[in-house]
Length: 322
Image (tube, rainbow, N blue to C red; front, side):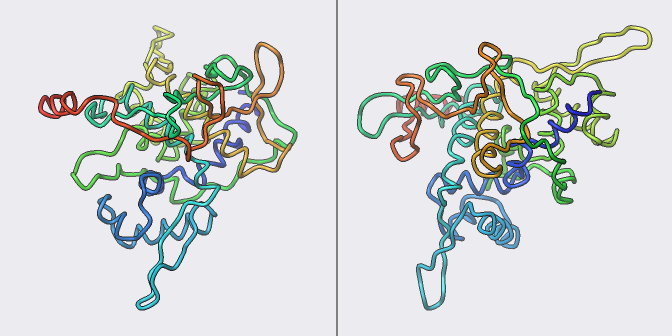
């Protein structure tokens, strides 16, 4: 296994982003922040989260620069948490996760599906992670990773992130969105990263990720059970299998690109990326950008409003059917 490949998988803008936001409760808190949560009780009401866990995660997000703590009451002293520019820039990640959940997740609720419209009434918004062509999404195979100007060393892993993350629960008692469960576990998203680098075989995962056999087997089994990976035999005697991204798994690529773009902008020095994406067509470096496929323009979250994807009667029928 190429040592450069191992280094690229473990040290790139996506891995840096995951060290900041790649944990299930953190992602759920940010999701609710995009939906308007600002005060401690807002998150308590919306999430089945312990007060101590919420307090720790809010402090972590504030220290990382994604939330700003602002006083709104003096006696007794009370604070609210507002997304900073760095936090608001995660909108691309949030919207790509939402769209994947709607289109691909077996846990999605069609009655809650949304579509996006321009606030100025100019028409629909179709978010994509675009590259050289502003109206065309980057697809797997359009770009290839290569070591950047400063490959460096893999960042230190957080012990909290090494452990198995139990799926957080909604207040309703239902499992969280599948996308958040996948990206909210350190080893799962590292295995996914390796898959997008075309790692397929068990021994290659072991060499590339420095992961234990038990953890690797658990994460591969989970990804297969969720339909993200397919297990295919490549050797009969002895029997050997490889793990290949399914269509559902490949559809996660825009979310990966959104994490890459955010990590590159906020967690890496300009011009000093540890990993770059290179266009297969032109050989030029590409930094994914969240754009509207209709107009090719970059999307400003403040110019977008979500609306139900279906009529009220359709939503009622869907809810009744469930």
